Image (tube, rainbow, N blue to C red; front, side):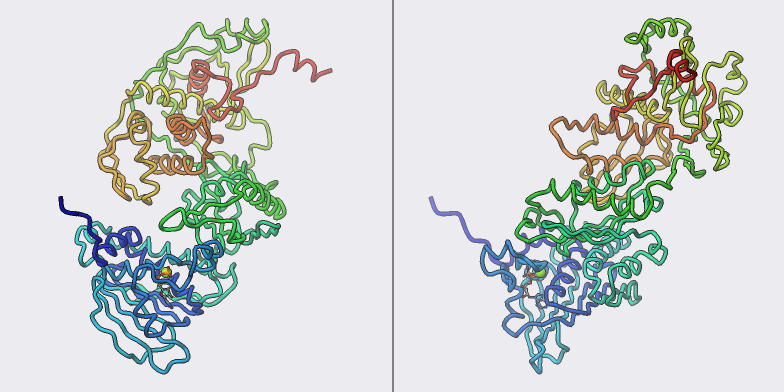
Length: 618
Ligand code: ADP
Ligand code: MG
């Protein structure tokens, strides 16, 4: 038999490699900007046409290249940045693979112009699909200009795969932000289709953040500075009241390289613990400096993930540094989110008939069974009557007319229930022998024969929803409601990956996906009782929960999904509940398998016995 193995021709190998390096115009932007920085430029200009589909050009005033280097720079594995494997552990440059220019030249028309400072004349090279079209002497300023035109001209499939200009431009802007934030001392300008989007002079870090994210950002920034033997931290976190529903203002830079690290992100969230509203994410712009020997940036082809030698120590230092800053700037004590007027109520399903699925109520269940015998008698009183429709959806119903509380009425103890919230059930809910009331729109209080029961409404509802979702996911039957118009949501490829992994489970809760592609998700059905307006929040919450979940051996995607959805959808504190709703929540809670703790293992209710009360009067 004849031999069949051949070496791939260079241009084919380059095209294949290009697939990894260049996913979209934004990847070209990243590589070219990084090359400019590696060349010690102090001024960098980015010029884009048609969201990079027609042109991506970067002009720098860096050190430039000699004639030979200019030609060599397009060879694969041609790099001036490392010479031996040891150099990999001392990296001070962005690039080191020597792959970017070769890859880009394999799939686009590239024009390079470059000149060394000491030379009179520079070099101009044109390459199309790895073929050198021309190379000549050129009059050009010191530095380098690389123009990349007609990206993917020879790979139509990839070209067709590009998203709308809006989406591609957003990716480019993201890359630009990352590079510009990592290098505030370098001046940047960014033009799209002839108009200037950013003009950033050389400046300090605070000014850079403000220039990029707007003047209002200034007042939100709390400085974080910390220096230890292994790590230097500098930068800012956003004050908690400016936290966002998206993660668009979260930036970690390690040795001036943008990275993503769910683990370190978790450290920041931990520092903000208790200061953020549910579903909100802190802003941060943090620069970490570590010895290059202690990191490995090699584990990810596009290099936004890195591996630290001692992640646990970094976690601890980072958390305490951020906590310290928040404390020092006196943020922690003055905050009281629970009582801000503007809590959003997603539950506007007033006119919906709430029916299936029903909760299986164990009538003989006694929530206080393992308590003392005094409480035992209590449950005999059946103060928790079974509501007519024992379905969790009905907890959503009629909850929209809230938010009319004055901001300071929480300073006094108010007993509020029916009067402030309209009831869906109308007069039917008027109940003379009312046995529950709401305290500070946060707790449901009920009298027991032997004392008092105080339920945390948010945690209780989380427990109820959590068990329901778990049940639906495991028995694989849930009712979904068809959306009138399909809902299209945009995510990053990473995020859609997370959703894809959980797709089957999500479907079991009632979601119907018509399309899940790289960055778009189209939803045509949602679980019964979940308002359309909440869908993106639920999914974002889910993604962030998955991302910030510190993986451990007990990780279960199903459990996390149920927890996350329960958290997103549970009745919030600050929400008025009428009497029927209160009763229903109480009933549903005690129909749960584990009524006494929330999905995150915190108590859902406490009891105060007559004895305890009597003691207080002694
Ligand atoms: P890498 O950055 O990984 O070395 P690239 O393909 O991006 O690989 O670049 C190859 C080489 O070309 C670089 O190592 C550098 O020597 C040179 N080069 C690329 N861009 C520039 C630039 N803007 N200014 C000066 N030299 C450059
Ligand atoms: Mg490079």
